[in-house]
Image: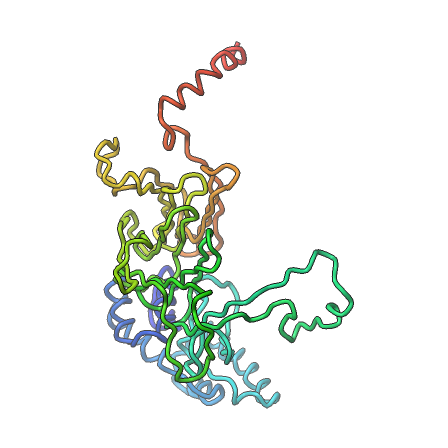
Length: 396
């Protein structure tokens, strides 16, 4: 469909990402993003608009798309896709469940990270809904059974089609918007942070929150804290410091201090870290030093920051964003995830999705910055000096 509209192959994934927001934003806002931020022509964006607004009964919409003169029939790939869909829809009709399916040309969810066919179903009791019931944050208790040990009655209860007898719902919170990411406070598992389809970060004390019934028309639960400051939706990059009361959040990386709040429980960021020129996808705190964290983004860069260095006039580096002390630029495309090695904290594994630059695949890199970057120079030289005699013996 995007090829028919004239979208260049290298922009396929990023335009799909824009289309995916249609359930939350009007098309005019999506069009503005595609044209002003992603470089599409107005004509191409308008043509996309004529297609993504199509939604209806599978066989009826399919018949419309296969009418004489349809642009879909003149494109080999789309013609094959329509034939495949016809087989699927006729099978659904024979199974008497065609009326439970909607054919929606705006469905793009997952095309930015899945590699196979996607479909979307709505579970009426789920956490993200179609509006017939509210969005929920569900807290459950899980009874962990010892490996390879289970009583006969437990085994007899097992049923892949039913809910597990070992997972019991503890509390339901009516969440203001869909739940896109959840992060637990390492020091207190009862405190969680969530990202939703808004610029705010919500902090919940799940122990103190009242249990709610997810019924249509129910008012949203009130978060215990609200962290503000993002201009755009910050849906995914989120991390809570394991030792300090700090919270990291993307799109542009912002650091919040949970102690820095108004009387109404609202807080704004204490630092903003501007070292990326694209959306931040992941943030992670260092397990070795509480002030250090990393951020990776769609620009293919993984930055390492130390918030204690913000405002440090003695820094040797010039023309770099405050707090930035290392930049890993070894990936060819967007860095979608990374993790610190807990046993060797300055060793990092990072993963990039290289589909836009190479047409498929990705790269996993394991790397370690040299000691001179994060340790005092005198300390490193003293350690090297202790090995001097051994090195001289080896060289001789």
